[in-house]
Length: 528
Image (cartoon, one colour):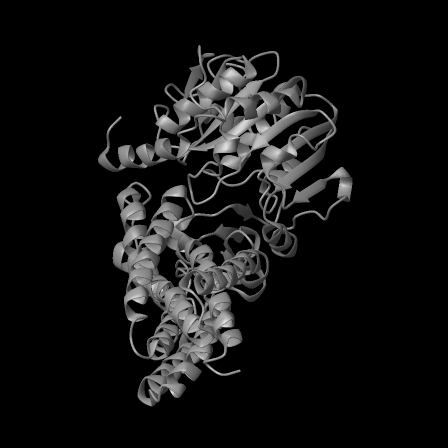
């Protein structure tokens, strides 16, 4: 095949379509360690890519009128290959321009939104613009090579490009990123685009641009690697990987019996998804997982305590419950975790029990909402701890329909506990979520602040109410949770939510992400 070959040109259109989806789908993953993966970040990335593609189409259409469009096509492919290959190396310094180290979550609200837009412009507009130029240039070359009509040539190119986009979509999500990683994905896409462009430049005798392009690609292949967020002082990296859903790493701090491990997901702003200590049971002050164990002490029922954990992570809730349940109560638990990579790291580094051990079941690669229709039994307790990027609650897990379905899984008198990240008992996210939960259960819901944290535990009971923190039944008379319950019973640490006339959040209208932005903005300016 030669640059004049229609087969070669069709291959270029296919590769450009695949590369477009690779750049776009992996873009949010590249930004996630600093900005998260909220709909705002997706919107910024998609908007930037669409604008850049549109401008590229216009430029390519004008450039196609030149006597030999192959030269421009070769330059576009080389430029796109270089811009794509260098993305992993440029991500960290670019993100740090708009999201400096040391920001607290309260300070980071505007930086997360506008910083992700600015970073997307700097990082992804150049390769997307270059990708946009390719389709009209290829169509012009095909038309001249075969003496086709404009419609016939364009249709052939669009077909090849769309098929390439289809392959790129599935391959990026299910093959390239989880198995090769972000760096290799972008480097590979850049190398393919650059390799396809070289013959056009050589055929057009543009040897100088070809040499510069080869050097730039070689430099990217040798030097361009994604640099993740820095480790905090005292942290030791144990493992890291790119999963199908996110960037994940395990770090350890401390020594001996005092050492702890964290499973960090999209590691910006000090976030972590799961935590581990050598002994199962209650964690140090400030860890909200301890609040999950209180319902078993309020019931004091001997025998099995059947728990469904939605958002299992690496199994922190299991380990806390295992060591904190009352004597004579045994844990039977089902855990739902959407990310199989998190489950694998949990088993390797955080003592997550293997599937089937002691009646425990782990379902990975399953969304928590979908899991409600798949579990066959009723439970004494349902725990919801499904979060990403500090405060991002999936909308499908924050609707009245979801809470009604969860309530239907509980045995008579069963409990549901929800971990909510918020800034006080008047937080807009907490208010909307608690009232929605009350509507789903048709019972009052209790919100209690977890001491030494920004977490709030929501408690609901099927067919009844949780004990009031101001009454004697709130604090267990014995066991490891008496101090925690006592601190949670202090004046101003709790709030009741009545059943509303209408739930604030449902599957049809669910502004949970807007409420989360409002929550961070309120905390930043110090408003109530």
